[in-house]
Image 1 (cartoon, rainbow, N blue to C red):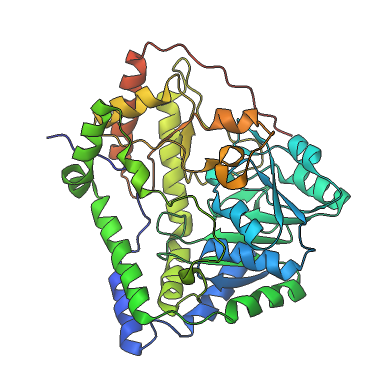
Image 2: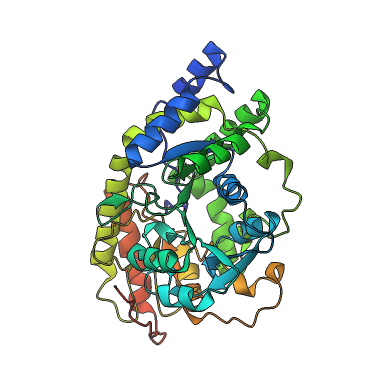
Length: 425
């Protein structure tokens, strides 16, 4: 029988249930000392700034925006390729998102596009370190300093990555991180703001502390959902549950996976669950997870190198680029191929669940209105596929994935696409 591999895989502590049970025994599921310990350990690991825990990574960003106290209608520049929630929260904060194109080789904000997008109303830029690769921070920071802009790093995918040997998130005025189930550090939700200026950090902390504590039942429910997600993405369970649906859909050219995505919608007023504090049990999981973060990152990087070696010589295939002085966490392993949809369909028939783009070309979303901006880099980047190489897979499983994907690509008859070279300033 064919054993299938899910596109998703969470990083899981071997003693997750023991940590949860111990917090319950002490009566510290919601409140407790681990919250402050986790914030201090997080800031110490990165080496710069103050860390403030939040209910979601997106709320860390929202608090940073509010703490900056910018004039209403101020423009915030974001990459055209990003998760729709981030520019939507710019609007919720009373500001205006402006989109700049990306480098299709690195998937990150192009400095020259940033320069073109700046106006007299621009107050901040949000370089998103997409898929685990740091942005060209030298150029972006230089532009930001010259034009008097705040720089807020979006590090949702890149905890553990470095730029010129220094952790991402420590270059701008502030940064935000996500601890959602599939992120580099998994605490089953939550996030962190990292802020360099003490006064600004105190304002962010005050906003987070003003939120109510979550209900213990809600936290336990979140942990149960996370456990179910882990169980259903295990190869044996996935093979018998979601895989048959995806296999059938591949013949019908249907996309049942779209029902798993968060619906794109206005977020004003903010959903009730956004406005709460980060729980102690999640912080306890985060403290333990920090100790394994480097191990998980090295595993994922080794899997990426194995995939590179298997695919790099195929016509029409372009493996991920890593410019000099940057390390990649490979939150997603993104590849240009001759025919994305054909590869996705035929790979699922071989037991490999491949993801298409799970961020958005925001200039094409009705949520943000009609746009005359037509970003060619972002549109091209939206054609990539994302092949599973996550840390929870064994070397043998990644080898099998690579071989099966290669066999599909070798039998393809589609013409190669042209992808422009990325600039490596």
